[in-house]
Image (tube, rainbow, N blue to C red; front, top):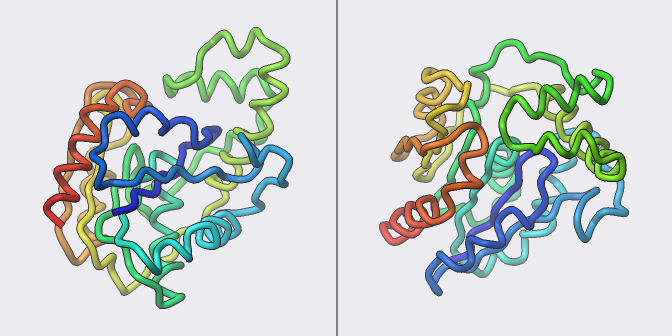
Length: 231
């Protein structure tokens, strides 16, 4: 079983590296590196969600033909996972056994989005820091800012410009929804995920804010192991 992991806005594949020590040998951890960061730093940013999804699909298409797999996405990664499912379906490829949507409202449940990607750097970073996953020290480090802000700003741009498409065909696999106890996501935006699958939908709450994923590696990987053993 392969577990493909998609990062949050501004994140790289490295955010999942510590999971390897918690997952069983039967689950192969496969974090996805998006363009414009990490080892793909020199590649141009995506222009929209569709371009990102097409890139991810091309990275995994050979592996999903030969292996059972699941997908985990946090925040922006959840939206990418959602759209990736339908890309895979449209290509007639092997479908995932389970999808973990973490730290994100159900697609379509947010009717209006605040536009932040056009804000000046300082205001933009303060908005990001309010979510709780970015250290204030970054604001005081010019070199880090110069590296980090363009990546993050582009990720936020493609999120804020995303247009939800209502689909008749529901996700045809079990899904798990993970949420932080102190996140600002509304409960109805979480439970709305149940309407996106024809299979089981389990909802779990972890201690923490929007970036609860950073402090709950063992608990989350235990949940993943339990969920995939049941497959």
